Image (tube, rainbow, N blue to C red; front, top):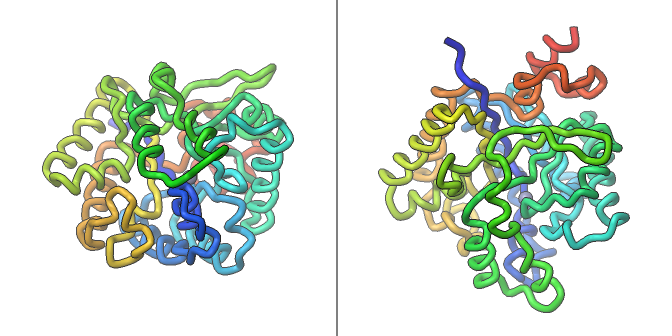
Length: 331
Ligand SMILES: [Zn+2]
């Protein structure tokens, strides 16, 4: 029997984005860890022959070294580039229409220029996706949005964020709307069609634990493992089992700190899970990816859509991402 479909994605957030979110005034001077992270990601995922959708922040495409890091993800068997906004501001729901257009469209163009690949997927920073984002995506002929995080813990995550960050003034006010409220939990926890005006896009939510709606992305998993490895592993196994039982096609999310240990970056020490030694973290991540690959047929996100509903994708939307699924659909 064939395995159910899952997808694997990475928000390729650079250190400056984490430091800015923490309210550090020197965030613009932060060194970049993208190449270090890309090398680890390629090693770990490559070993298991796993594909990846990498959500890229436009601002990082202004640096040659970061462009090289982004391009080096191509050493993976399949790498789909997707759009993660220009400035990684987690409050797109407070922006006006022009600003939203620039955040999406400028990154779209820059990714095409650097990688030669036309994006068809978007994820808003801070899981924020107002209707205007969808309108822009639809105008740019995108296939999917991946900004929904249907967790029961949104209000708790926001409270923790506000407690830890040094953000002040207007930015702090904007941050008070982060992650949505308990309403976030009412969103589906599986891929679904989302209508905007007369168009429709696929929505691929960041999968949470079916039933309890607690997070299962890797940063949360390694954070739990900081308290108890056995508990974290049993939690992740339960999540995958429940996805299978409930017919949920999971979309699993990675971040660069999932591949970095405490030896790698002192600036990131405040971040949950960054007190763990590198070897321990890498072996946990390899274990979890192994579990995922054992139970699911893992794809990049556009291929997850193609597998769920091949008719919803136009040939022109598949021309620049090279993968076996695309080859089958376009020939
Ligand atoms: Zn991000």
